[in-house]
Image 1 (cartoon, rainbow, N blue to C red):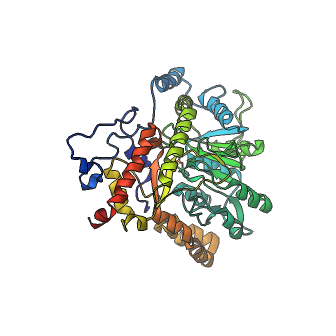
Image 2: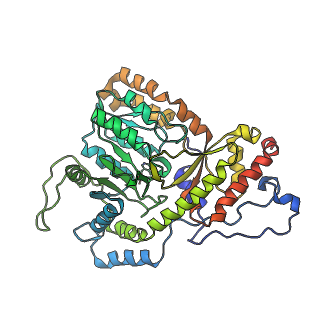
Image 3: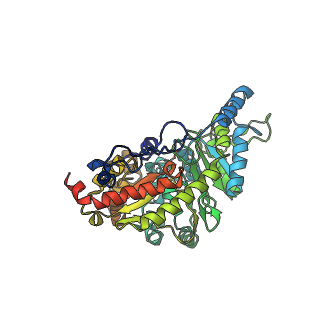
Length: 450
Ligand SMILES: Cc1ncc(COP(=O)(O)O)c(C=O)c1O
């Protein structure tokens, strides 16, 4: 993959060990003229202290894990950690049903399995996403169809979905990238008109809201990840939300070797359909219950800091925070994403801007590469199974069609990301991020020559 820096490594790199807040050290022994200089030109770092570590944990997690260990119940069952988590996560999000899974990928796999997506089918996805969104479609031997990105929001361009629908399209799989809701009004409108199910990839969007409703509850399914970098985490883990009972049961079957729910402990269920093992463990669920004691407060803190940061960055020419759609009542800010315009920074390339920001003590990444043009994705056109299912002509056509995402190309070239844990510290952290950019902008000509 051509990602500038893998998102998970990026979040790890921005965390200081432990769970303390950022240290702000005074600048000592420097001439006043140096203070306004970028760190790369000999000035002090704008943010010298590091950011809050991730994950956050204390004795609550110790007790949760020990409780599960000592119970001797390490497998899902009524009244145990996994089923309790399912009830609580459904309550927190307002969903009618929740199924815990072993990962976000597993949640998406179960949702597509429950929709009986298979060979010959097409599923619409955005190119600006983590590769898992693509992989879950091809693992079902369906064709992923990329729809271009809305450059302003970084989300799938909902106005282009309808044109990509064919008689083979069986689902729309939008992603709330960075934790910011995609345009669910327009997507629902197209999906309803075409009678297609929407599977929301909400893997980065815990507690984000569209018109006051939690994302993941507006489509047929909403899929979440609890992988280590995520805003709610158990190292690995996932969940499917739905308001459709029959669909919830089909997801359950798919994640449990195709077996139905046991009627009681003495009754082992029959195998009913296609499936595999995608279950979450009791240990992970107990960790999630402990993490859930903080998730609302952490989400509120990110929102406050992100709103302040947006106000500051909007005043810096050449820095454009990702647009939130009018229907967004909350972004989860798993990533804080903005566009960088080198023209307003004396031609300083994005790579050099990132290096300068990192030198200021503000870790930044360039985000995703162009997934739709990735060598791995293109190699699907030569995959023997796909050639057998779709034929040479269709696979060549698919290859050409998928390369055409011009707005995504721009976004991949101009995006800059901060990570969620950088929004968990004090308000001054936001001011220092803006200070770093102002310093870099003022000395951009000099930095460009280095
Ligand atoms: C947008 C998106 N989809 C899917 C996934 C897959 O989740 P997991 O890593 O839990 O399998 C991720 C996780 O990184 C993601 O960011």
